[in-house]
Image 1 (tube, rainbow, N blue to C red):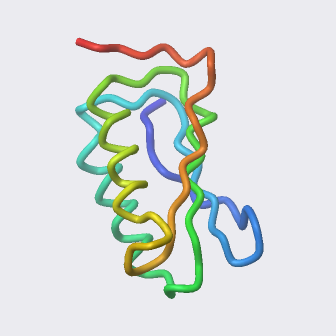
Image 2: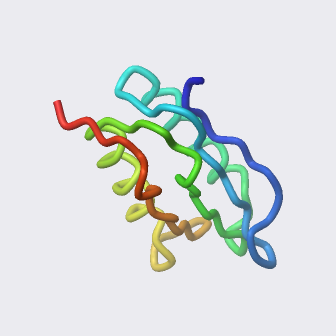
Length: 97
């Protein structure tokens, strides 16, 4: 299964949880980041986003870095909805090449 965000309800009051499922690699990265940007631009500032990576089975280095950077750019001090990043699962295979 290809990685993609799936908004599946709220994580905390007013926070939207986005789960990334399957495999995340550089081929899917542009679409993944585009969908995340669309989501954050459509939410009011008081809504937060929790990016949940616990459903990933595989992730390459490019995706890992890009998702961490996305979360940092949408940190609580930034303008727009605040984002938090739920860590990769310990059994997720990380590819570095």
